[in-house]
Image 1 (cartoon, rainbow, N blue to C red):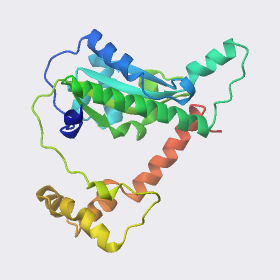
Image 2 (image 1 turned 45 degrees about the vertical axis):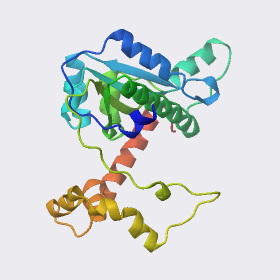
Image 3 (image 1 turned 180 degrees about the vertical axis):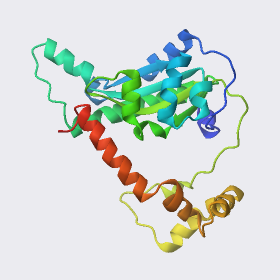
Image 4 (image 1 turned 90 degrees about the vertical axis):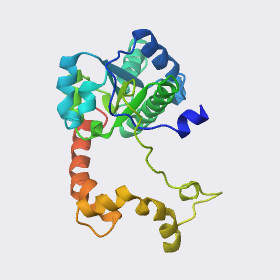
Length: 247
């Protein structure tokens, strides 16, 4: 398992080979052993295999090709609807239409999603997280008919890899591990921690292609701008209200 995780790659191209229902269900069932808030299992997973359904989902994910080419697309949803319905049918009054409940369900959902991915990679499958899920949640809600108190949190494409891409870089251990309490970074430490990333040929290519001076500017001015983040934040809050997690 250590070697699987150390050598993992994001896979965006898949062989035209199906994933059997038995294998997929085994992976999902095992991933449901992940830690969960109070044993409530505040998540649901929508399995998409049908080509027409992938076509409906594709625009929400900016038409990234792996949505249509992967044999399976999984939408992991924060779900307080099932638990709330159970409460109501057992003479209990649920109070989960709030931000804290959404946070709890979100943590449950992401724990299951990552556990699934680790298990899938261990058996030779490849996965790709789609960050676009929270960019366009309403489109996914409409396509999958998600009711109130259900919110799409992340989407994962799954399949047998068609080739093994190069492994992308990661910051060194000392960049993210703090002993006993948080240690803020000095300018010298920032230079050291990001030196390797900045030295990579692909990083220099990003700078040149985007006509920027530094790699950081590629992130702030092109890839993840303040304007885009503020727009998507407003949209996210709007959809959370519509799904019943905010008032």
